Amino acid sequence: MNCRDVREVADSFLCDELLTETNHEILQHLDSCGSCRTEIDGRRTLRRALHGAFDRAPDLQPRPEFIDRLGGQLREAAAHNHRSWPFSPRWFAIAAGLVLAAGLAATILMNRPTPSDTLLAQDAAGDHQNCALTFRLVRKPIPLEDAAQRFDSALRVLLTAPPDDISTPGGPARVVERHSCAYGARQFGHVVLQYQGHVVSLLVTANDRSTRAAESVDAVPHLIGRPMNGLSVVSVNGSRHAILLVSDLESAELTKLSGAVSVPLAQRLAARFTVDRNTMASLYVLPALQGPPWLDAGRR
Amino acid sequence: MAQEFVSPVLEVGWRLPSMMKQANSRNDSDAWAGFELEVLPHAPRLFRIAMWLERNRDDAEDVVQDTMMQALRSFHRFQPGTNCRAWLITILQRIVSNRRRAKGRSILVSDPDDRIAHTVPFVPPVPQSLTDETVLATLERLPTVFQEVIILCDVEDLSYKEAAEALAIPIGTVMSRLHRGRAQLRTQLPTTEPVVGRPSAGASENTLNKGIGEAS
Image (spheres, each protein chain N blue to C red):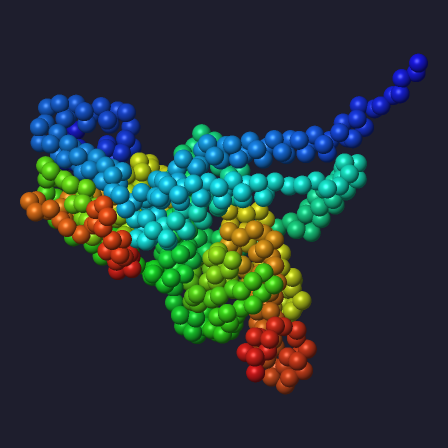
């Protein structure tokens, strides 16, 4: 190992990230090379200086009362989570057994994700993680209008729907961003929402299951599989598009939000398709749709 | 006297709820004890990361509180024996990231790695005398992405893998950012005059309220 090799792996050496054999080679080199020894010592000095500066800087230390208060809040929250058992043991046992059996059967029979569902959920979770949370997409997001012209005119709907401020049964949701982005082989219309302090991605993409859901406006939210890396995916298969919500929210909460946001959007997209295909027919279809006030306002 | 026969199965079935209740209670108290033991001691170190990233004591306290609450809810997912601090820092980074987005302090696509990939031509030797103020003020001048990896790897002693998970970036990116960040840090360290900028004891925290937005 020569000086150049040592300098190249010096950072990893200091972080103890090298193989034992490589460490030995470096140490052997350092025994006979004063220049590299000085270099490594310098880097080590800087590392220690950083360590010490963070340990000692007064304005980086928490107030003792904050730590005490935090401990109390956490203890209270932990106690609050403790569940009470108000029912008699026998009835509880019977009910629990029945609910468990029914739940298992329902889960197996009704909620089994297909392979295409799973792939779609993986893409959606990946897009949420890389675009909404960490901003590390390989390809740059583009405006919705551009995406509507290039890929799918239906994405234009997302320019106004859902509106910036949405009232839902679980509380207000706020749109913080709208764009189109690509993840894997999919092009998504992407609306980023803030809801209950969480970031939620609303993603619209072409539906893989168009034969099953074509023209349908009575789609219902369904959870796809288990949470992936803590992210749940709830899908609504409306018209020719899948509308997905992705977040680290509890699955039940995300499903509730989907009912308030995705289902009306699916209806809007279905109505748009009907309008595109036959303008006269749409005059009869649109009034029959049920949706929240913001959708009706948008339609007018 | 004939003894009443009770099927062992029925006996267990009858006692199951109370056993579950006891077990649940024990599990809850065990879980809290585990949380108190494993997680709570990290609060001060989480705070200093939050304080560095948020530049404001109230915001930093909010971030640490949110992080701890999230950790409490997710404690069943924590694997004993793994690095608890790394797990907490991952949660904290996600919360900080969400807050930045909510405040409009982040941009969608920007990679300072590309912008400054070739701007570290010469790395001078480390000065002999370094004060805390000098080191912190120089670190504060680096782009945020470099600050993050330096803090996680050099200050918090996270491994490359743990830092990559916390920041949701590839390990290779951690390594290259760490290399460039350290090199830039050395380049910008003053050779003679101490740098004044980062407040020491008693100084106003307002002087910290700059940099994150521009540096992102």
